Amino acid sequence: MAGTTIPRAQIATPKPCISAARRIPSSSILCFGNDIKGISCAKLQSSSFISSTKSFSKSFDLNLLKCERNVIKAMSGASDNQPLPGLPVDLRGKRAFIAGIADDNGYGWAIAKSLAAAGAEILVGTWVPAVNIFENSLRRGKFDESRVLPDGSLMEITKVYPLDAVYHSPEDVPEDVKTNKRYMGSSNWTVKEVAELVKQDFGTIDILVHSLANGPEVIKPLLETSRYGYLAAISASSYSFVSLLKHFVPIMNPGGTTISLTYIASERIIPGYGGGMSSAKAALESDTQVLAFEAGRKHKIRVNTISAGPLRSRAAKAIGFIDMMIDYSLENAPLQKELTAEEVGNAAAFLASPLASAITGAVVYVDNGLNAMGVGVDSPVFRDLDIPKADRS
Image 1 (cartoon, one colour):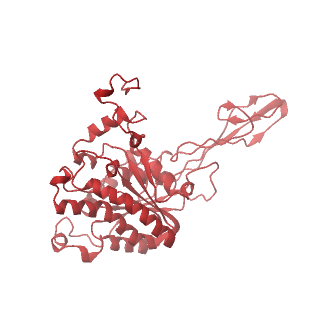
Image 2: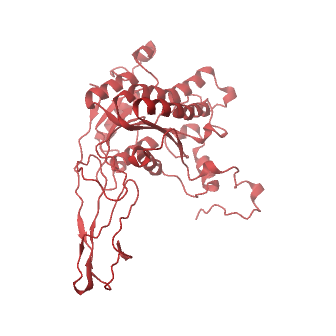
Image 3: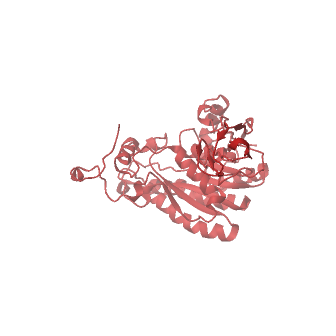
């Protein structure tokens, strides 16, 4: 059986604490953490760290009120079936398969962490030539620092599968790939085979994440892109999503969700993002709408894609100007801050949760609002315009 099982971490239990008694007037009041406002209220924080405050005991003797604070943290593999209070992102009991993680530096890893923090079990599909390096890095603790969840435990990856999503089924694999040393020793790694293995190992999944993209000629302008380069970009970056859904949707539980990652180059000109990659992202977004209809009607599965802003990941460095794209975003986006991978991960956790039960066929922008801009305000032509300039302090 191709794959690796990673030991599960210990699960911490919530620890209640009692706030100090407060002297209050005879009228009823609320306790919001350390502020006094009226009777009781739940405070909802981020999707990957959820805390709530409730008033559990009231004493009207001497006009004293005791508030018990119950801190609840969503964590990987949580077995507590009690519902969380408030409006949480709760994925306990859900199983996610994330295709495209090969290190701890990209959006796929961040999505895995957010899903795990909300309670989901994590399965990973890793590119075949990189799977041994990835597994060894996990075992040796190389990723331990970046595996830390908000509750202090480590994200667990239940199993790692060798996966090359370029190949739909064994019949698609050319002979030169079968005899390639990087692939020899691995078996059952096409999309169809991996889906069958996941079914054998776990039965079903609830969440499918496509974090895959590759364009061998991405640094070439579109006019200089070969037919091979163009079709390779489409195959690896967009058809692979269709292939994943074709084989995984039959083993997904009704009400499940699928998420892919796209980029604004699908609808705006991004010079330097070439090799057919802009076309591949446009195809991915179009397919998201069609697949949302088909998977929704036939399987009750939601299909969405996240248009993420620039991230200084290892994969993004392949285009050669990622630092300039980040600087451009800092200068021009409505929110003048660098986008973090965690923000994209949290958006994915929301889309995978019941909170997004009516959202499908959507492109969700997580890019500090850069997609909304029609001009680059950092241009010298706007130097005399009375608009806020980037604050780099």
